[in-house]
Image (tube, rainbow, N blue to C red):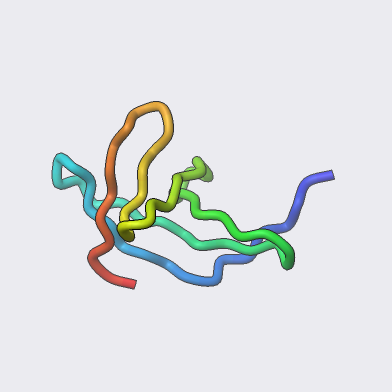
Length: 64
C-alpha cells in the first residue's frame, strides 16, 4: 500500500551550478518529506539547504 502525500509547501531552489529546481514539502498525516518535482527525495540540512542523495548536489532556497 502506498502512502498518499499532500504538498504543504513549494520551495524554489537554486543548485550549485545555478539550475533552478522546485522542492515540495509533503506530508502523509504522520510523516514529512521533501521531494523534487520528479518525486526524488532530497535531504533537508540544518543550515536550510537541501542535498540530492547520490549526486551530492546542494540546493539553496530562493523563494517559498
